[in-house]
Length: 275
Image (cartoon, rainbow, N blue to C red; front, side, top):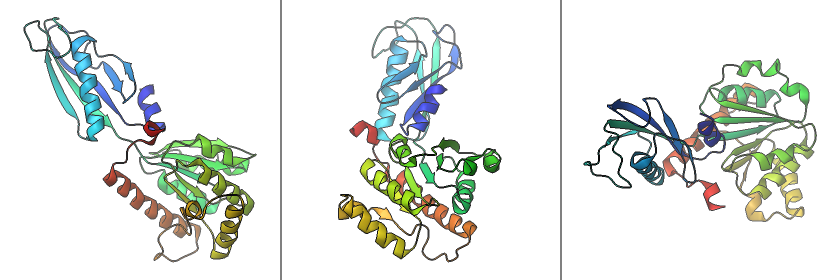
């Protein structure tokens, strides 16, 4: 289960292999589990032909981007056809292969009024949610108690100094939202996000005047016009008016949900494998 959580947090796909049923003798009992990624294997479902075939099939599912679970059946007999090695325990085994999809990852920099409202909405979705603020009181347990029943995996980053360092700790493909209380902090975060090169999107909250100043500053700091243009500002749905924190949060959440759907439909290749 630790392997499943690690893959999820790192946004790496995998396959959970479970001994689904057994008749007669087998190397492992029902319920034994193994996790397979493109690069590694955790635990075992019994070794030998059964396990090697399961690993190959799991990786074929990863390559194909399959999301539906599959069942493999094995006769553990020296008379049964085999692919990798003879395995003659004498039983019959069914393995359940369940793809572990990559879930969206979102980082909210700034847990003020809008940031907290947005976190409350996003926490109701199956995502990895990173919350970052340089003000300790904004991340106080009493304030974040509204997220206690979150469906999302919530990661709180306490960084009283240089919150932009968190950018380098985010998993590839994260959607970064910059909405802190300090425009200087926002500018540093935008610069760090552009230099990271592995984020899915960079969103900035603010006015046209703010963006004009930022665009000039980011160019002065050596960022190309093409890179600067990848920052989305303002964020949210343009046809949903209103300046109340809850309205802005709903608008940004809806915009993100549209991006999540586009990601699922395009089935992007895992970026870490390209590094």
